[in-house]
Image 1 (tube, rainbow, N blue to C red):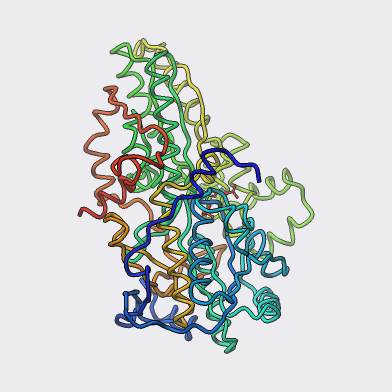
Image 2: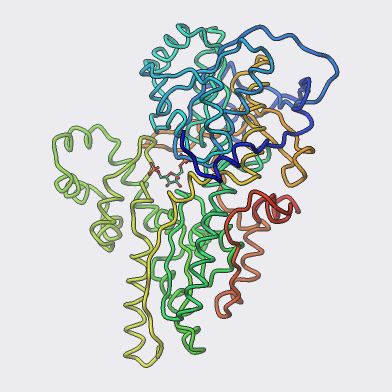
Length: 550
Ligand code: FBP
């Protein structure tokens, strides 16, 4: 294969493994666990996988013999840097345990398991993808694994290939489904285990046990490099305000991390907007005030970071979306809109939604309103990355400033540029942190399988310390679950981690934001470095460092 010079050199990088995963491994079990909430309901729904203990891998001198085993692996959901290294870690550990072990990759996400599309991952395949970004080794997809038919269809191919375990690399929704699959296969005594791995650039799959989801580090570093470059440009030309939307479907972790890395002039945090019950107009006024303030110093330029999920957190819009979700999942909606085109369905929605929410819907530009009312991904999420919030906000700010100008309250200039940073960060070559973290996660997943575990997610902790001191193990997925309303019904799901307004990362941002707003204190992180001094190449995100230094 023809590859770039960097790719060639990077392929030789040997990810650092925690001490506990380097040689022979023994398992240490903790106390039985409980779900984070709704314990009785979760226990009833997962009788075979509820309450299992946390596990940790520790080095031992005892050498174990491993019977041959076949494992399947699935990449699920949005791409995140490091996915290939999870597979490499899994593959290397499997082959170390027994060279006859086989690894199968199901193609294009969970759909590959259901539709029996797979390839055997051999050493030739693995060698091409070490330390590379992307999920193109086997592809990814968003098929939601939830029905008995899907589980049974999966079981057919699993039995055909004599697979004893499936590793699902995914975010909160995919790992929720991994848990359902684990429970189903356990209840049927199939002897097939299911293990999850915490993936998502959004950084919202984290809790007491999971320090961070993989990909968050590399994606944030990539976006921060670009924001830094834009800030240099803005400070050089001094004529544009850059409105930058940042990926992260729901939580604002990416926006917050990029703010901490770049000191952008303005960063909106959705969770704060919700907590303060702010309206779109409140947000627009906040931005316009800073633009006006900077203009008095002759600084008609700046940067505004906008989390892509913002619109869903504005309380009035959140109420609207909740009603739309319930409304559209009714039988009445399904039968009455079945044969309607988008415009007619939209008209139907407007006729059937409550008066209060209709007012909110009609206050939005039609394209945004249609997106909220009609489009959902297979997990029922609004596809916020398709909504141009950065343009919506800059237009509203422009109008407000124009009005202030006529009232003599604004004498500056306002010209906006728009950017959306999302896809360009999801497949970047993993940083050293993500390369090491993912390789360790894959190795952990193989150890969980070898130790007969199911319904667990592979974890690696203490990652602000040097990699040798990282602690690897597994957490029962049911431990992270609670009941939430989805598509009009209460469902067991992994609790999503939103930005904690009492947490050190947000507090650090708040302590600095007024200074960053008016003064030009930009930071320029530059591109991710793979070789060089540790402080340049290996640091984790500011978010993780601040969270762990509590
Ligand atoms: P996951 O939760 O599956 O990791 O995906 C995250 C994400 O990158 C979000 O930040 C974004 O809103 C969404 O995927 C975009 O989805 P798609 O790739 O389907 O356009």
